[in-house]
Amino acid sequence: MPPEAATTTTVLSVPEISRDDFKRGQKAHSFKIIDVLPSESYAHGHIPGALSMPVPEIAALAPRLLPNLNEAIVAYCGKFT
Image 1 (tube, one colour):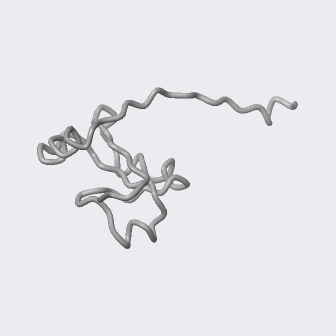
Image 2 (tube, rainbow, N blue to C red):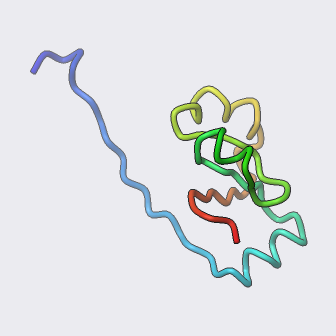
């Protein structure tokens, strides 16, 4: 494989939080909420206060929407009910 075709994959451990912890954090504004589903899904319904950041657009949108690299983030990709 030519060097320019080589890729590196980083696997991160992503902690999960309970629904109760999420609700407490949401009320306290302890984190940014990111909806990573397609924009059409976001338009049909999303968690109040969530930012739309579809997976294919994360690299382009994150620097503008998430400028604080130390801020906690909660991402979701399923029903918000």
